[in-house]
Length: 297
Image (cartoon, rainbow, N blue to C red; front, top):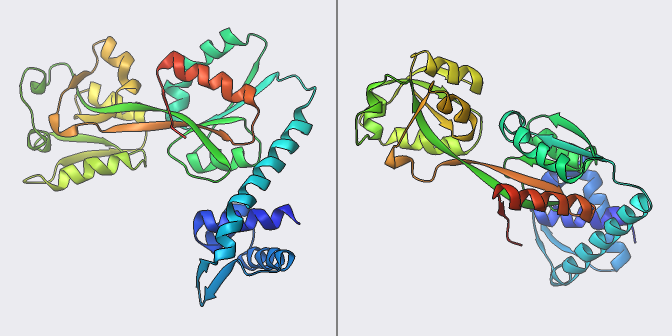
């Protein structure tokens, strides 16, 4: 039985789409279909009921699915064991997003280096989708990304960075309480847009206001956004961790807005399910040290 055929079967089920499975496997849709058909011939049974572009699992397909997953996992663990047997773990390859690279990694790496002084660390900064691809291609050992879902990826834990409103020190909001989103809508706004779904929640809050906010500047760079606010060019919603130094130095002041509630940016630790226990254990120590939340399995 061909492992690649099993892989195609599991991917189609996970994504509920032949096209999406093909994209994830870097194959054409006909190639995925051919692999499924080859698997069906090996098993001498139909795994899918097909009707035009739609498909459903047959009863036999449902019965076979958990075994296919177990076979794949066992195969990949065995392959990983062979590749790493008697090989010292001397290098850690980490991939992360820009914000994580700037504000999270400088906190975490000294801790890791203290635990494993001989470990060489290689850091790659890229968008979440690139980090995921590098992880699947085994170009990195672990990633710090936004939320991802993939059948070969394990989410180890996550960190939530609260989003708060920040103003310059002599802004009227520093002494005015309580404040509402309607108050915010009357101010010049420096809107930092990082592409995360979390920011969509703020847009939805804007939609409930009596009149839309005055977005004077729409910025895709966090450092630029912070400097504009500190120079009195407007106020801004920013991740708390990223402005910790500016708050400490008195350049920015956090303002409580009750409507923001639990808004936050989530950073997730991910690794391949087949990755060595050494890597997973190392970063589970990180979770404990920095109070990251472990993802339930």
